[in-house]
Length: 220
Image 1 (cartoon, rainbow, N blue to C red):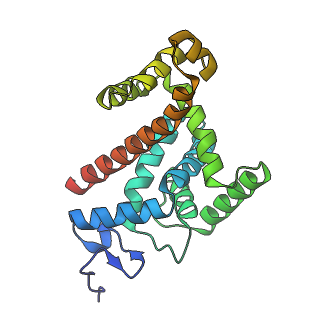
Image 2 (image 1 turned 90 degrees about the vertical axis):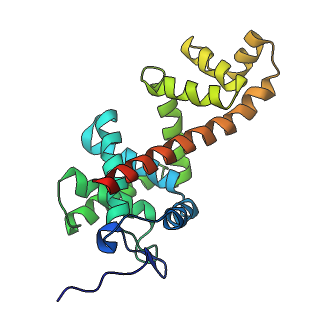
């Protein structure tokens, strides 16, 4: 006999997932899930998982696609913070999606542990540090991909003139804030302050992409 479906998306700290729930999340449940993910550094965990995905696929595009599927699996299959940290949960899902396995396995756990040991050995065990490193690499790659235009659209909508200048200077190969300040006639402090805003813009883009993918999956 099948176990009865839960009535709510959360049972204590456990997020049961939409597969077990048998329905899409309500707006309050989406907000609760978003708050839970923020509390467990979803952005940092995503960056670690993306690095793991890149290690497996050796392709930035395929790694990002893999991470998108991981985000959907997280929503569908659920997660219990008491059982496993978010970064490990996402690395296991990366392995599972990469090998087309439905269930987690001992091999997945070993692969995840080996990868995280390598991260620690290379001084990248802190998700925040990994996020910062990956953030810089993604910014560099964005100059040659459509993410560049996505960033420009976000900066234009926010009327963020300094980050629009930053984007233009990056395209010209000017990367140092002091050089940007000299070229633009602005105070160099403006470009340093723009870094925090740029990070928030990127985090919102990641969150929006995650929510859009989740909504598309719910409509299937």
